[in-house]
Image (cartoon, rainbow, N blue to C red; front, side):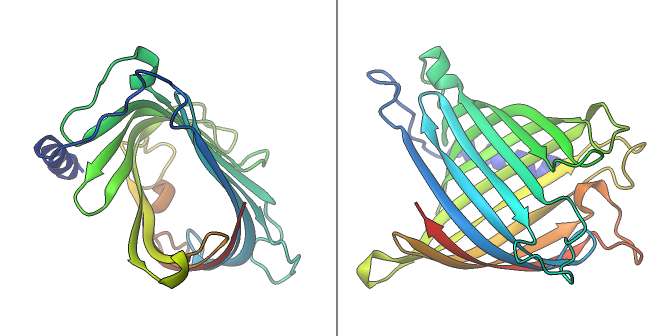
Length: 262
């Protein structure tokens, strides 16, 4: 992990970025988006689950606040054979980031770093003894070669999951990207999009592996109103669960989705 971060830092300092500018109007870059994704997961880890779900995904910018989030509703077809049929019905993720450039009124860009943030992330599944995680750290928008703008965040995790945890439990590095790679007649295009979440330094009293994570590699066709996509998700001891023959937490899963945009 240290070599990866060192390589990223070297690349950032060697590149040229474009600073965020709030000098005349803090709301001049405001925007918002919303979409519904009907999805199916094949062999989702941990545990190799197959299930459908409806994802209400949204994001945008208002002044100093940059927001991304989604609400997943599982087993929308109410199928008894669905692996999520007896689990919690919903999962919520909210990731508000607060621009340090905007709050201080100063240009904090350097190298390929366009803007700095106080980053937060909240994950909740609504269950009494389920996921209840809060992350806080430092984030940045980074101008990467070929990719363009990539969101990067380094968080500390405050873990209140499963009823017995209540304290700081390691760190997470996250990055996400959206790169159009091919344009078609009529304005539609093909995009390479995805993310990586890597946790490390977790407490061995709570987890069987002190590091682990996942990356999502997606190819999506987009039009103004619709999108169709396929994603490959690659796991390694995800959520700090050591991979075993009894409970699989490393490997591959596949996702297909159909999207309607608002």
